[in-house]
Image (cartoon, rainbow, N blue to C red; front, side):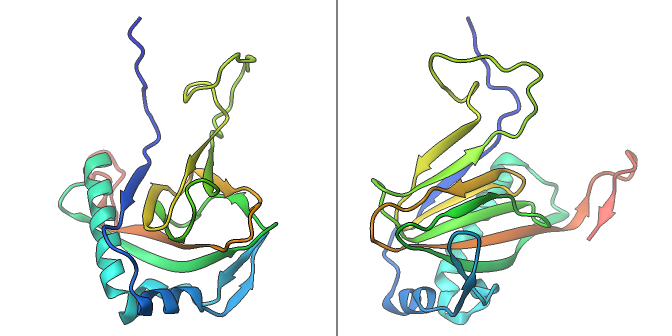
Length: 199
């Protein structure tokens, strides 16, 4: 049998090839916070506009551009920009609720502090199944959810409509991440197909 993965959902995984500087860490780990569902987030939601994160912003912009170009292959008249960006802090017995990112095209999470053997991100298949069979083994075709281990210095990019969450943290080490949203600008769609949108 030839098995083809038709219309897959793209996920991009990238690794920063250096450790975060002391000034980057100090800035990212010491933000004033507000309560979120299950954990806390920074009040400042435009962190990647700060000069102290200029180098990290450059890395994220490069990765975002590569992801967009390889997956969506937009015309030269379309570009993408980071809109909001904020930190999430999760301590022992905390979690990050299942959610999507409205008003965004591609979202991302950069892990400031995470341990590969303990920290994961879960993604959920929200496609409606008219008939759902019980499975003996789970794979990317029949699963309702799938998780990936994450680690410090890793960046994950995904469509903003993809539902995701972080399970309850069992160990006593802080998991810290920088999340962000993006939005296209320029010309979207096609004039002759009556889908043109100029942003």
